[in-house]
Image (cartoon, rainbow, N blue to C red; front, top):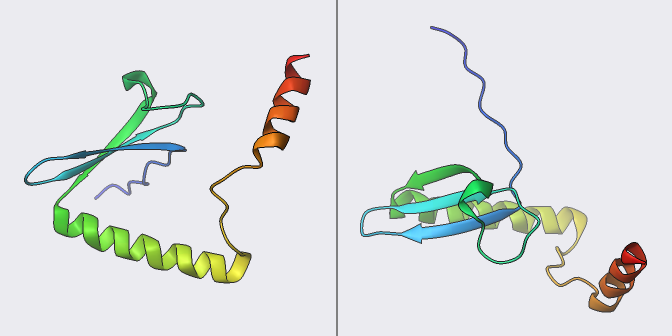
Amino acid sequence: MEDKKPIRIYCNRVSIGLSTFDITLALASSFKGGEPDPEDIVAEVIMSPQHAKAFAVALGNNIRDYEKIYGDINLNPNQSALEEITKQQND
């Protein structure tokens, strides 16, 4: 059997779709706000709700461990610093 290496992608946006029998994660690489455009989607992961829940638990546990080691992950940028840097880059 031929050795296959997993595909690696960079993803900074995720769109989640739901149906009765599965959950779809559309992984995208984009620097635009809002929902990713179809051309930005680089992969889709489709799993059962049971697998999605187990994945969510495992991901949550890993994030908790990461934050114990490296500190809290900040989801809210310093808005005034962001605006100042953006203004400087545009001048």
